[in-house]
Image (cartoon, rainbow, N blue to C red; front, top):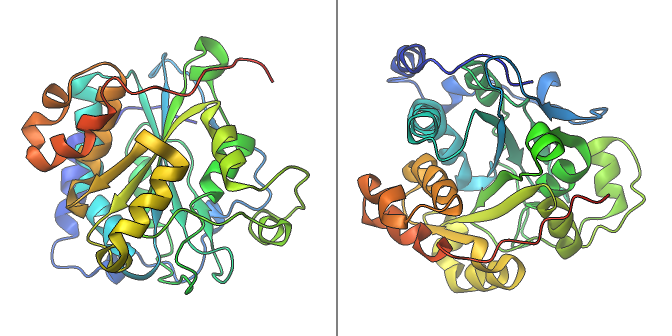
Length: 299
């Protein structure tokens, strides 16, 4: 998917309708929506089209456990407009196709992963607001941030890589430590089948990195991160290295993602993020000149 063009005016009209509403009134799902259920999904596809001939897939996978529902709420009310408008006007990448995922805890939640389509227009608003903010999570110091890596590596395909050998972008977002390895039972619960490959987190990350530049954004305002920030940062640094991004203000997620992409595409942090404030510049500055995982076109 990924036809059409984002209409900023239509989005602003939608955002105005959310004023005065609670998050529960914006996100009305009380169970996983059938359109976001990954069970039985063979592929989510980002394909070139007449509207978007040089598509760039961007996956944003947000933690919706505990206090993290605030991220999705901020995205619905303002962040989506910023994300698309800045991507289209800044032109760091061509023809953005955005997919949202919601992340829970595969050990205990009912919907540990929810997955939208790739969208290039305002249909992404409907996709985002269908997410069930489960507010789950367990007491195991992490959520299943590796489920988006598994799904993206095995259940997405995009023309940016297939036709042009260029990776897309994948951002996981949350406030807890790097994830424990998945189990066969958890994959069966989430996706409906028993896997036949390693579920080690480091291997799942490497698999996703074949077709996506993978980042993790630590939300320092989150309840867990406020109490255990040093631990959270260390576990993520050990796993993902320089592609760890620390974010102080959750309402600046869209700006942080746009800036990180622009830096990866060769812009300076000041040029990429200067208009968004010093906090955003600080969050992405270390990405400049960083080593990206080696690209392999082989199977």
